Length: 300
Image (tube, rainbow, N blue to C red):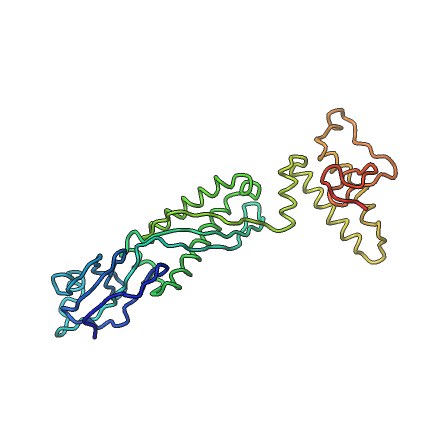
């Protein structure tokens, strides 16, 4: 039975703490430190709250609890959980994997800063509903919550938009998270992405799209050509040059797309001399060079 309630060993990183004894004596002394709020919680509902200072727990100082218990009070003891929450600013981490609107995989991680704005709402929505009565459990819940919102928001953009308009997409993610945090009684102070990446395949695709040398249809042709050449080169009985020979046979269409369609302007097809060699990375004609003039790939 508690006759003195206080959170004395709180560190700067602590978010929430539950007083271990839920049997409290009427007239007990409650001490709340600066940047703390104490909330009495019972049967899934946050009731009376107390700000910094010393408080004597009486029926007059706890109208919410008395009204909830009605005639269930026996003697000078009542049962309720006292939850302390910190109103200081805290830092959390997030990170996960999602995909863009064009189904490109997207890996991300970062940091966010928040504070508890509405302690009662926070106690109901996070502490009580999620059974998160300790700081590690609150951290885990908020990290999962952040990841879900970030994944949902990035799913509205294609890969090129995410990387070329990162400031704009980050702002929209932040706005979406801020609105959802308010529902939890939290204030989002700031959010920063420390890293956003995709797989090697999609990173290469992004490179070609950003150079402006290849449009979407030509890029699809390049990827099909490379995939077919790799498969042909690995097939039983295929010589070392089998895949390269196939690339040379179909490279005219892709090379035409890369060079901006100069031949299309005259109505004449892009011509390739007999014995010409092509870059194994992008399919551009090498013309005797040791490095590809388009992508810089070393050849030979």
